[in-house]
Length: 227
Image (cartoon, rainbow, N blue to C red; front, side):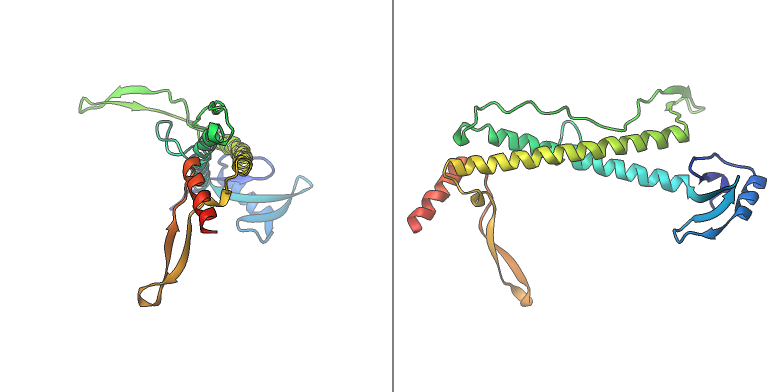
């Protein structure tokens, strides 16, 4: 069962764990609900305040999940196995630099791959009774919340930046294809929904997606011959 000391009170500022007398006083002063779960409105020091109780372990779990999702969406799994928007931008720049679509063969340098929000752990080593050496790290609870909140803000900004760069790169690539007589639609998979077994419709692929300029040219020639 959760202890009261695992929650904090947000009254424009974050307060730490309070004693039982302070908690009782706050509960007496804040009786009117705002309609938002966990929030109450009351008068304190001649000011109308909003009090909200949040369990720290829940806030930490949400923050940690949001940071991990943003990290994976932007950068992928790891530096040795990158993915996400970062890798999509790298591949787009490589295609755009292809001499066959007007590039100079030298894609611009990529932004540094980063792992945001990971703490610089300072280990303290100790020997247990079973003679095994273990490493222990410590981090203040408020420090972790602050670190994760800052990481979330940084990652959110980086997501917007990388998304804009990727959209711009894709637009330039589509334009380069048109300028060289290629059809951007040929880079996409082509197919149709057909009747499948047991009355279900299934997708039948007619032509796979490609980014290869030579394959795009072959498709262009084939289409022109069919016309």
